[in-house]
Length: 332
Image (cartoon, rainbow, N blue to C red; front, side, top):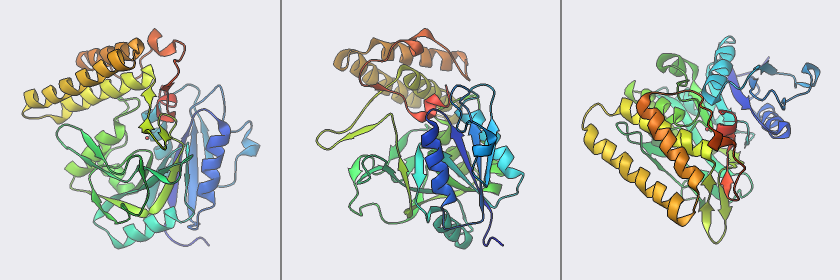
């Protein structure tokens, strides 16, 4: 008989089936054995498995008929996972692999710390495991702005202290099931990006606590970012990534900013203009500039959910990258 509380892991598949299968295998190899895995296949053109007989034991496999988006796809998986009444839910990007002891360590921590609702692990770059992708973050509850800790820093134990934080990334989020039920799942209007900002804010407003646990480790392929040993982290997002980032940031800001809106909007505008100038003058990427304009326009007009624009489909320019969250959301 399996020991310990039940943990359900929800993984949203998009893209390379081998990547998702590697993620699933890493979860099933966990030292905590009382677990199940729900895979929501959001990629009709490239299924995670060719037939149900290939699906690993312990995996519930749900095939979406269309690309439902990052938020809706994960919500589908969470609702299915809840049918087993798990004590905990682990949300994972499909382009991650987890340390064998991640689930066990998160369970042990939350079993002791009943005041904590969510654990966020130390996340490394998959292809450069000596570099940190994310070591927790701080969220401004009023503006939705985030300070990311540890990003692109070589790991030298500088982020090895467990501590309370105020932002939990959707890339790898370990939560008490009842906490997600209480605050609600991902906001499907966002489609992709900004959903973890919104969720973190709702957790904080409900008086819940988020903790960074560095002993719990994840490796993230993180296709939208690359590490160069000399130049550091460098990336140019795809137009679709850019659109959802700036649209959802403004959409969240309009909901978050209950007071002092002028000051908070001015910060958004300043950041928008800086990035726009960088895309236009430094990188000479007019498609990214157009995507920013479309995103801000749609946020103001309240046009949410999935949006299709021709700028998204134009041939990629070298240096323009798309990560799995947008792919699975246009399609953490």
